[in-house]
Image 1 (tube, rainbow, N blue to C red):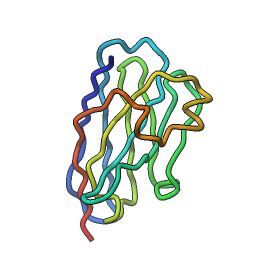
Image 2 (cartoon, rainbow, N blue to C red; image 1 turned 180 degrees about the vertical axis):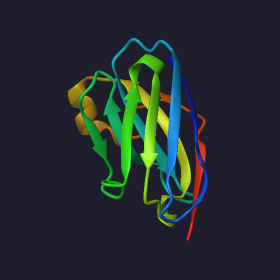
Image 3 (cartoon, helix red, strand yellow; image 1 turned 120 degrees about the vertical axis):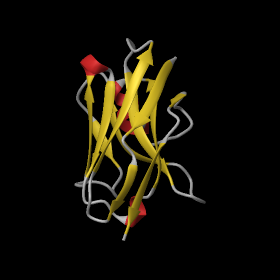
Image 4 (cartoon, one colour; image 1 turned 90 degrees about the vertical axis):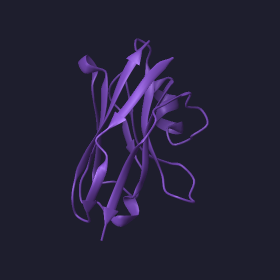
Length: 129
């Protein structure tokens, strides 16, 4: 199991930026599909972006492509989400998630909620117009 703790959320105006962090601890020596999900009130949780801990692939939801960037610092066991040009529709609780996977599985299935068995507690992002 991996323990995940998010930070960096807050309230910003439309057009602003935020950088979310997700610190991982516990057994981090496996290869994981790491992802950011978000959930707005009354809506289903949706995948925002993913990265494979073994290096290489990233993936993004169409709604955030060109605005958000996912990255990782392997030495610090930390996952990041740089969010630029924020829109009111980006408002929601943002969660970090991880599941042991192969690179191919992560590339194809990263946006599915059910397979992830490690979740953080979430950090709130509010974007005002």
